[in-house]
Image 1 (cartoon, rainbow, N blue to C red):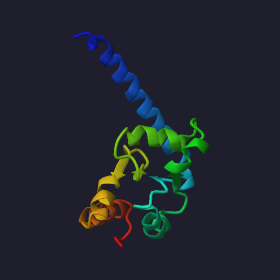
Image 2: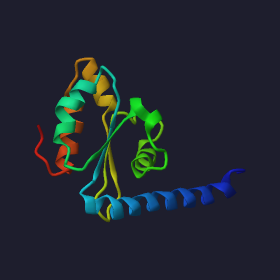
Image 3: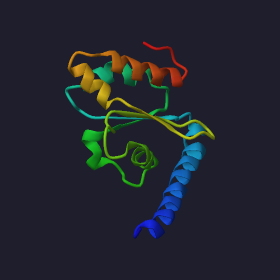
Length: 141
């Protein structure tokens, strides 16, 4: 296999990058009370719902990024690094990332749930929202 010799070094580099991002979050965000990164956009499918039902319930100090305003993001910021680490290339908007001290971060993807809700099935949205807020230690809405 041609990419075999390159695969292991790439995995090591990615693992080190992921570890460095987590250590930075643990050191810089945890003392400030930040543990949530929430990403969404100005989509008519979810913008008003998120702004009315999710953002007001986020813990104080949470970081919110608007995908529609990504041209103004500072690419070197820790919040953007966390987004890129957990977001991937699909189903990344809306997305919540929760990072707790000395634990690996956990992502909650809302895209499919909002897609289903758009077509009348709100069960998936209720489920991911309940899982997210329960993980944060907050009562479900």
